[in-house]
Amino acid sequence: MLNLIDIILVKSDPIKNQSSIRANQLIQSLSKRYSIIGLGWNRKGKQTKTENVHNFLQLFNLRARYAYEKHGTIYLLAKVPFFWLWIFFKLCIYRPKAVHACDLSTVLPCYIYKILFRRKLVFDIVDRYSMVYTRKNENIFFRILYSLVNPLEEYFASRSDYLLVVSDKMLSTFRTKPRKCATIMNCCEDHMLSRKRTEGASFKLLFTGHINRGRGLETLVDIMKDLKDVQLVITGKNKEINLFHKIQKIPNIKYEGFLAYDSVLDLEASCDALIALYDLDLQSQYEYGMANKILESMMCGLPVITNISHEIIEETKCGMTVEYQKPEQIKNAIITMRDNPELRRGYGNNGRQAFLRKYNWKNMEEKLYRVYEDLLSL
Image 1 (tube, rainbow, N blue to C red):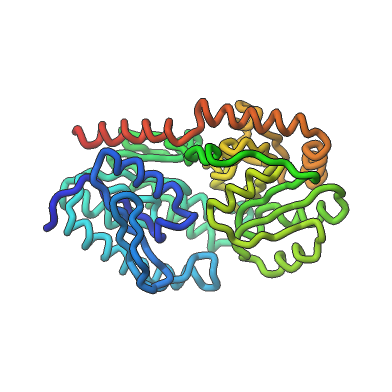
Image 2: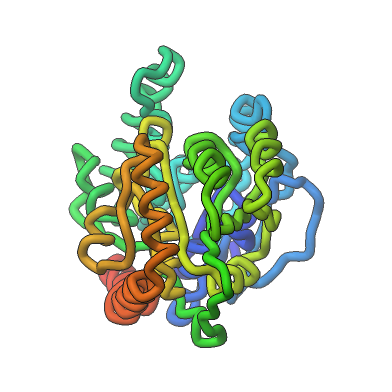
């Protein structure tokens, strides 16, 4: 057995990529006060040079598809037990005082370790898996999947020593909760200290996220066909080839590809507004969670058009809310932003001030420290 360390954080991806910004922030913050290891899954399978996040990171190198790929869910489920065994083996070696399990995909071996070794478990939920599978008017497969996943999520949440969620709304979805809970939002660090907002001659509307159904892109393609003096800039992975072909045919839509995080931030700083749309019939978790890009746009001082996070948009006055199923309303919001530069600058300034005052990682970091001070002092 190695020397006892304080915390091991576990996530089912390589941790160092863009989908693990929260995990990176957690490790960087906690490493200022505690000894910590990050355990992640490198699904490309090839041995890569381990990159230190702050202390160090260890990867499970087993090739596996992602759920969004063809037959990805089946192939992934077949290999998850090997990942769990690897996690449990590492926990037994390092014997951390606390284990930080990110989402349902990692919690089982962490929970077993907690029971056997009488350690502390933090269950950190960004997306409720059961809500990903909650789809209105959906077929029986998804109803069965929900009935299986939801009780598991409820069970592990209620038996954790600390439950962390990204919004108060998400916390309210749990029927049973542990005695200790905390909301730590996916707020950004201040990346605008090294950047300046710039505006071009034409109005640039930014979409960041994967090209996929249920993200409003079908509607935006139709809107952009006859919308003048607006350029829609898209960045993200191409997960829907037919939709991508439609996008390529529209002259005032520019696809920038899948960019590194710093490049996305540079792009955000050079655009005039951000649009974030979600079909809540397909992605009901966004009713209760928080899209990172809303918080990111506030950090960048970028006004937003969205159909989610109504309370924050209303509180901060950082943008405009629309209804997903009303294309004309979405079009009018874009036109309003395009034709009123002072209005959009006002929205952007409001968002930036709200970020500096409240919605920043420094504030979330202090809450995180209070969680672990409480947890490890028991």
